[in-house]
Image (cartoon, rainbow over all chains, first blue to last red; front, side, top):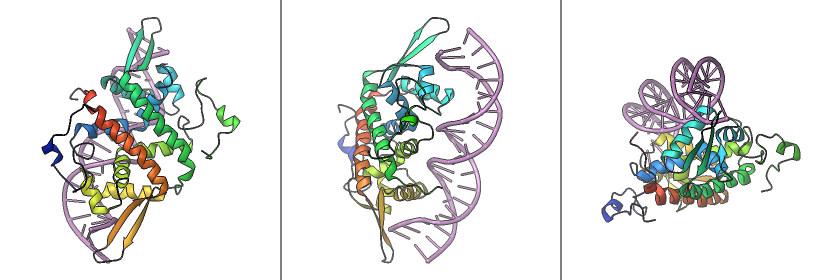
Length: 131
Length: 131
DNA sequence: CAGAATCCCATCAGATACTG
DNA sequence: CAGTATCTGATGGGATTCTG
C-alpha cells in the first residue's frame, strides 16, 4: 500500500480510458511480474502447505502429489529470493531442511488458501469437454 | 461446497499424515485442474477486467497490455467452456462481440481482484535478483 | 535427506499474415 | 471488428541419475 505509488504521469500511460494503467495491466510494470509469480499452480500449492505449518523438503514433496524435486526446488528458491519463505538447515546427518513462511509469505498464504478453497468449492460447476 | 464430496476412502489415499488428501493436493483430482486453470496470469487479468464491466474483444486486448489476440481468444474460449463468461454477438457489420461474467465468473472475479491487489500492494517488497 | 545436474519434450505464447 | 491460421522460439516441467 505504501508501495510504488503510481505517479500522475504513470497513470497516464494509458490504454483504455476508464481503466487504470499503472499496475498489473501494464506490460512492463513490476507488479505484472509479481502477479505472474503468484498466479502459479505450484506456488499456490506450496505456499498453501506452508501456511498450514513449516515443512521439510520431503514432506512438502510428498504432500503435493505430482510435483518433482526439480520443480519444488526451483519454486522454493524463487520464493526464498522473493522473501516469502526462509530456509533453516539443521546440520545433522543426513541434513534436515525446514521451510517456513515469512510475514510476507503468511500474507500470501491467506490468498493461496482462498484460491485453493475456490477451486475446491467450484470445481464441480466447471464442466470441461474431455479435450 | 456440495461438490464432489470426499468419500471416506478418498480421504485415505494419503500422502502425509495431517494433511487432507482429497482436493487440490491430489494429483488427479478435478479440483487440481480447476486450480491450474484459475492460477493463471492471463485468466486473472481477463476475469479481473470483466469484473469491472463487460467488455468487447478489442477493448479487452488493448486494456491488457502484452496479450495477443491468439492468447486472449484461447483464454476466452476456455473461460466460456467453463461457464465463467458468456459471449454475446451483435450481428452488425462489423460484428460486435461482448464478453461478460456469469455468476460463477463474478465469484471468481472477486478472487481475481484479490490476487491483483496483492500483487500491486506487495510488488515492492519482492526484490528479485536481475536474473 | 535434500538436493544438483542432465536430457528432453510438450505446451505456451509471441510474431506475422489473412479473412468474413 | 473479431477473430483464425501458421510458424517458431522460449520454457515449464517430467524422468532419470548422482551426491554430500
